[in-house]
Amino acid sequence: MSAFHDLAAQSYGGDEAGLICGYLFDARAPEPARAIDSAQAAAWLAEQRDAPTGPASREDLHDCEGDGQENPAYVWLHFNLSHAHAERWLVRHANLSDTFYETLHEGLPSTRIERDDDSLIAVINDVHFEFSFEPSDISTLWISVGPRLVVTARTKPLRSVDALRTAVKAGDAPRSSTELLEHLLRAQADVLVKIVRGVTSRIDRIEDELLAGRLDHKRARLGVLRRLLVRLQRLLAPEPAALFRLLQGPPGWMAEPDAQALRGSTEEFSVVLRDMQALQERIKLLQEEIAANVNEDNNRSLFVLTVVTVLALPINILAGLFGMNVGGIPLAEHKHGFWIVVGIVISFTAVAAWAAFRKKR
Image (cartoon, rainbow, N blue to C red; front, side, top):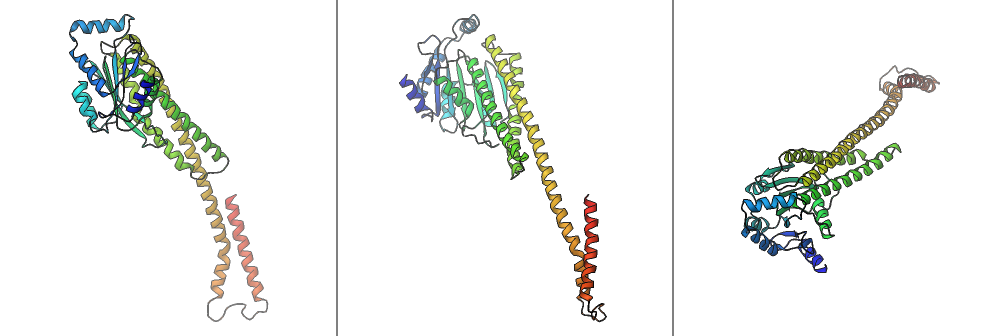
């Protein structure tokens, strides 16, 4: 078992072929999940290509999955596409469909799962391993699923596939390639649930601070969370529908229990998406409330400024009039002229203040 952990730890960063991790699943073996490197994977795939592939063997494979017996062995290979040799190794050894390679290069991150002859091609979106609740922390995972080979490939470390790798390393051994895909989708749903909980916690704190009257840039923080949820929902919302369309006509090697498990993961995923939609609505309401509070504060400041301006208007007018260097200025020679002018200013200021506060009320 120590050799198993050592090999997994060494291959996590990617070997000379860009293989991050590889596992051979065989329920008939003493160790149902065995870590393999790229050389062992190439040898195993070569053996499978040399094995008989006629109608009889395909029928045996289907019967083996459908009658409750042990499923045949299969391999899961997880690649780092940033490695220069990863795609080259896949072309040379994996014998994948051309659609998979076209999907790698087309640059469309929209989620989809489709059937291509006897295999499944999936493009799903996942959050980075170092996720910091930023909309940019989302990348694509490409998947090819066949009865004997599952290939996952990514350019940046992703959480869901790493959770699946950790579960397999801890002893989880999916009995079929379809069940491995179902485990990956459930791991993705679990990651989304954690994101929803994290966003909910942050929104709760912002709401508490809002009720306490401490605004301090909460709209910007809410805007980041809302953009994250919008992007996640835009990228992930097609996934349940894509799975539903696939399960209307699954490939022949997919057993009915595995198809039912995929339907269950679809329903779980849909629930998470609905929770994300509800969070978006909550953030929108909080943003509107914060905007209303900001407008109210601005109106209050504008009113104070207006009152100060109105109260200073009489003295400014009289000061301008009496400051003109012309003859005939009234009260210039009167012994009580200053106090008369002060009384006039106070009277007009009192009238202006009464008018302003009356309008406010």
